[in-house]
Structures are given as structure tokens and as C-alpha cells.
Length: 230
Image (cartoon, rainbow, N blue to C red; front, top):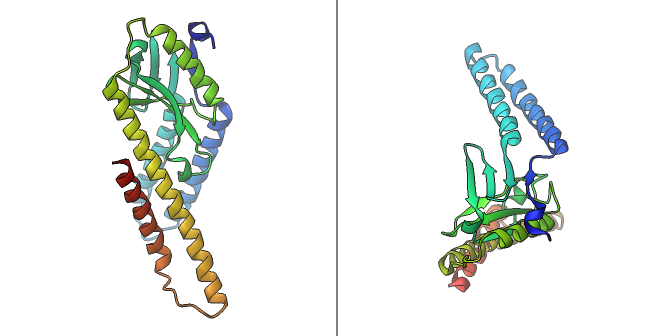
């Protein structure tokens, strides 16, 4: 990795992802708008207001996706977010990491791996589009780390408290992901068990357990992880 010679680097939404997003938003507007137009008992001004809000929200989503970006130059990393842009100088960076995306299960097409830059106080800044949907994320994080290690200055030193804060946060998120995975797995098992018992006419399980069971499993795994971490 060549460090500063690999700069500048800029990351934006890929054109294919942008087109897919616009298509998904358009489909959502269609699905959401038709039932509103079909409501005869709804005043016309209310329908117009709701449709206007839907269109405005969709337009904001497209604008935000185009606006978001991450760039790196000789001075540091700049991230343009939904509301404002933030810059972190190389000497203020404590770490740059690729991590599992805790929202990967929220919808199809979500990246499985995202990346963060961590500041002096352990706070983190998401590096938009430095993810496995847009780039070879490990390669790009490696390039950013090489630049950081070269440009952070000879007097740079790691902050023990920041490292502790970063590690604690990562442990909490890992514990939540583990608990969610076990919860989803238990839901599948309970559904299969319910169907088998129903087909064999041996149903002794209340269907309510299909909802209660995953919650119990989530809490048990999550609390157990917190206890072990302490």
C-alpha cells in the first residue's frame, strides 16, 4: 500500500445502485399512492397533502443518496452527511476499521460490511460508500490506513481511553448481532415445530410462543453477553 501516493480518494454511490434506489422509491410511491387515491371518504386536500409528503420524502431520499460521500486527501478524511460535512484530520484519527453492518438484516441490498474512522475521544464517523456494495472494502480500508499511518505525524500516539471506548462499542454491537441471529434462528425452529405438530395432530404449543420465544431468546443471549463482558 502506497500511503499518501494513493490520495486523493473519493467514494460516492454507484450509478447502478442509484438507479436501483430510484426504481425502488418509484415502486414504493406507486404502492403507497394508489390506496390513498382510492379512498373516496378522504378529503381531496388530505390526499393531496399526503401524496405531496410522499413525493417530497422520496425526492429527499434521492438527493441525500447523491449528496453523501467520503473523500480522503493529504489533510484528512471528509464525510458529507445528510445534514452537514465533517472532517477529521489524520493526526486526530485513532483507528480506521471495516466492521459488520448491524443493519444488514433490515432490507435487501444492505451492505454486509461498512467502515468507520474513529476520533480522539473514541467517537466514530461512518465512511459512506466505503462498504462491500461499492468497493473492495478491505482493500480501500487498507489504503486509508496506509495513508493515515504515513500522514498522522511522528508524535502521534494511541489514546488508551479512546481504544477502550471503541472496543466496548464494538463488543456491544457484536453482542446485539449475536442475540438477533439466535432470535431469528429460534423463530424458524418454532415455526417448523408448530407446523409439524399441527400436521401430526399433536398440537400442544400455544401459537403465541412463536412471538414470545424469539423475544425470550434475544433477551437471554443479549443479557448473557453483557454479563460475560463484565
